[in-house]
Length: 322
Length: 296
Image (cartoon, rainbow over all chains, first blue to last red; front, top):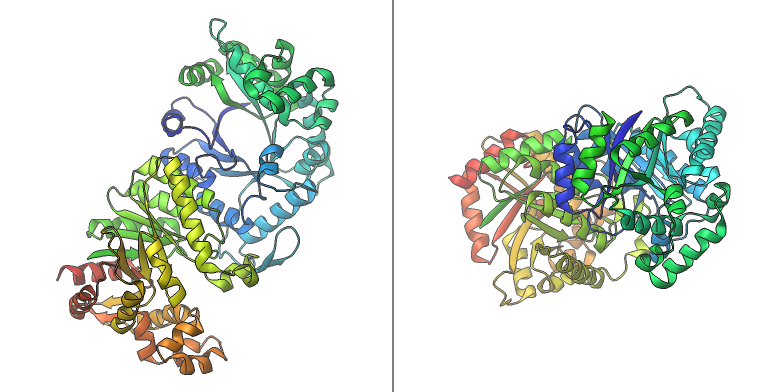
C-alpha cells in the first residue's frame, strides 16, 4: 500500500511550496490536489507547480468537476500537465463536486452517472486527437485539440452507483466517506470492475479521509471541526449504507447550516470522529491506514487538516509509515 | 518601446519553454501566451515558462466567455505566488468560430464590449481582495472595442499600419493616466534572409486576423468591398487571394534593417509596446533574427 498526501486549492502557497520541496524526501507516493471550488488557486496551475517542483513523486488532481468549466479546458489543461514531464506522473480525478459548492454556483448535479460517463468519454476522445461533435450536457461542434495523450482518469465517488461506474469505466477510484463505508464502497467498485469490458486491467483504489494527528491529546477540536464539515456534505444515502445512526448526524448537519462549523463541532462526539476521520498518533494513523488494505485499497491519502502543526504532522506520519 | 514575443501554444510545451528561455536571454521584455480553445491551456504553459525564466514579463490572453473572472484570478494567484509579480492579463473577446466549436454559441456573445468591461471590473476587485497586483489590458480591433480601451490599463491593437494606428489613437482619445499603454499585437515576420515559406505562414496568420475583423471596421478603411468578395468563398486558398496591401495593414513583414524605421514611426503615433506574433516565434532562429533587428 502507498502513502500519499492530499492538499487543496485553498492551501496557502507556503504549504504548497513546503510539500513540494519535501515530497521526495518524505517518499510520498503521490500528491493529490483537490479543488475547493473558486477558492484561491487554479487547480491546473497549482498541479503544474507540483509537477515542476518534483521529479519522482506522482501528482494527481483529486478531484475537479466537469460542471464548473468547459470540458475542453479540462482536456487541454490536463494534456499540458501530462506533457510537463516524460515520466507521465499525472493522473486526473473527476467527480461531481461538493454538493454545497455546486448549489452556491447555481449548478445542478442531476444525473451524475451520465455526467461522469460523458465527461470521461469526451476527454478520452479529445486526448486521442479526434475531431469531436457532441450534444447533451457538454456541447462540442467539430472540436479538436490536436493532441495525443493517454491520461488515467480516476473517479472521486461516494454514491453506490458512481462507485460501480468507476469500476466499470475508470482507471482508478478515490473513495471518501465514513470508515464503516469503505468496505462496502470497495465491494461496489469491484462489482463494477468485474462487469467491465476489461476486468483484469490495472486499477487503483485510493482512500482519502480527513486525517488529524493528535499529539499530547491536542488536536481533537480540529478533528471535530473537520468532521462536522464532512458529515454535512455526505449524502444521506451513504450515511444510511454506513449504518450510522441518522439522529447523530442530523443534529450536526442542522447545526452546520444554522450556526456554522465551529458551533456545530461541539456536537461532534468521539464516535463520529472515529466514523469519519483517521486520527491518533502517527503510529495509530499508519495502523488505521494499513487496516484498509484488507479491502483491496492500494493507496491512502494523508489529507487536510493533518494536525495542529501541519509540517510535523506530515513528517511524523510519513516517518512512521517507513 | 517595450518588445514582446507571442509564443504559439500549438507547439509542444518543452519547445515553447525553450523559445521563451531564448527570448529572455536575448533581452526581450515580455512573452505572451493566448489561451485559445484549440491550443494548450495558457496558465500551465505560463507556469512551465516561468519556472525556467527569471525576469521576463509573461502576458496571458484570456476570453471571459470561456473562463469566469474567478477562474482567471485563480490562475494569476497561483502564478504570482509561485513565480512573482511578472504577469499581465489581456482580455480578448475570443475567436467566434473557435468558441462555437466548444459549445459557446454566437448568440451568447452579445454586448461584447460591456461584458469585457464587466469582467475587467470583477477581476480587478477579486484580485485586489487577494492582494494581487497585475495589469489588465484589452485586445482590440474594431471601433467599439477601441473605444472602451480607456477602461483598461492598456490596449493591444490587432493591426499595425500607421494609418489605422493613427485612427485608433484618435478614437481612444487623450488619456491622462501615465500607466496606460498602447501596444501593437500583430503577426510578424522580421527576417535577415527572406524565406518564402515563412512568408506564406505569415499570410495565413494575417488572413485569420483579417477574416475575424468586423465589417464596420473594414468599411472604415475601405477594404470591405474587396474582402467581402473573398469572405464569400472561404477555402484553403483564401489567404492567397487577399491582396498584399491588405495583409500589410495587419501584419509586420520586413527585412531586419527596416524594422527600426517602422518602430520609430509608430512610436511617434504614441505606441509604446509591440508584441511580435506568430510566425516570428516559429524557431529559435527567427527569434534571434528579431532580437538582432531590435539591437541594430
